[in-house]
Structures are given as C-alpha cells and as structure tokens.
Image (cartoon, rainbow, N blue to C red; front, side, top):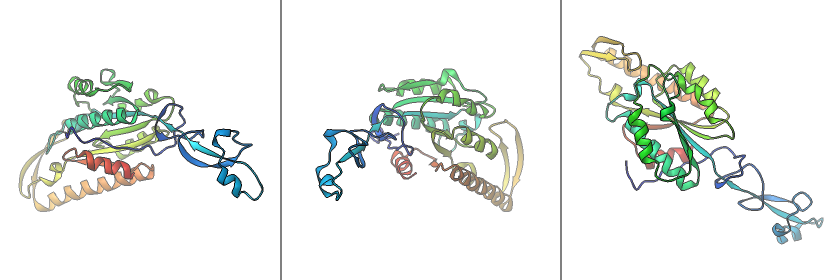
Length: 282
C-alpha cells in the first residue's frame, strides 16, 4: 500500500449529530456552509443579518443568513471473515481488506471522524472489534486484529448481527466482502443496515476465473464449504463458468443499486486513488 496516498470519502446522508467535523449536517445553525436566507423572525440571530438581501426585499423584511454546520460521523469497517476471503490469487483478499481498513482509519483521523471495526463469519468476533476512536496510529491494532482472527468461517451469516453495534446516530459503514454469499442474504443484510450510509466494497480477483485453462483436468474447491470436485475443462465449459461469474456480478450490482448503494470495486490490488475516485463519485 502506498504510504503517501490518502483515501478520500464522503457522507451521502445529512448528519443529525452535533459533533463538529467535515461533513454536512442536517440541522441549521450560525456557522458552517451557507444554506439559505430566512426572515429574522424565524432565525433571530443579529450577527447573521444579511444587509444586501434585506435591502433587496420589496416588503422590507430583515433577512438572516442560515448555515449548515459541518459534522463528524462514526466510520465503521464491517468485514466479512468467511473462508472465501482467504482466497489467494493475484493478491491476498485478506491483506487487501486489512490495508483498506488501515487506509480508512487514516482517512477518518484526517477528517476528524471516529473509526471502528467489526468482523463476522457465522458470528460477530468480539476479539476482532475496534470501538470507534479518533486517536491516530490505529494501524498496529488493525494488523494485530487480522493476525489474530483469520478468514476461516463457514459463511458470513454473522454480518447481520452487526446492527446492535451500530446503534444510535446513522454511521458511515464500509461493508468489505467478496459477496460470495447468496443474493437473498445480501438483500436482507442491506435491508438490515438501511438506516446507515452503506458503502459496499467488493473485493475481487481476476485470477479466479480469467486464469482457467481451456483444456485439462482442474480441481475446484468451494472456499466456504471446503467441498472439492474434479472437472475436465474444455472451451465451452470454461466460457460457461466465466459467463456465470459475469451474470452473478451483474445481478449483484443491480441489487446494490436497488438499495441505492453504489458499490466500489477493488480488483487484484489496492489503488487508493482509484478507490477514492469511486467513493467520491457514489
């Protein structure tokens, strides 16, 4: 990971918090980003009287500038710790997610936000959890958590248990996974987390399908269940496998958009600038 690159993100929701920070809040106030003009009777703040707007009013009303305060948000990385996340192709999925969590923690500190981390396979792993913190230097702690709790679970059903940990004001939640679980489960998970600002980050590896040979015997292993089967690959079967993977990716993308959650893709390696561009465009 490039030590110099700093991740950029934005919050799509208006925040209902009073903690000062970088992002737009939902409430109005006397400082922050200009919002609108209102009559003095609605916002009796003498320091914010706008003389130009007042003089332009044909009815002689006094106008006051109203602002949207900038607020802080709690940023969470919700990490899939199921066995498929241990896949090693062009890169290690687990290392990509670890480095991305480090980048998120650094970015949160820069923005004045608190960073927290949750991980789950069949359950939430308490020993993987980092409570929201605004202190710098979380990198060592994040690395230690990934070393202690490898991706080895039978499935990611425990991700739905994250809701109690995210109680209170709406959070900015980065959902980090390869999303190998059934689409119906993804649908329910996004529904569960719907009150928060969710950013699905899809970790994918082109070696998983693009490196399939056209001919020959190949042993395929399901990383979630451990089941194996031997296939005799030929061009038609290879195409069928690649087409099925493409169709599933398209269906997953449509599911995200149906929940109004534009996904971010991290493919083969972590490019902080490319991820930042996707995050700022969502």
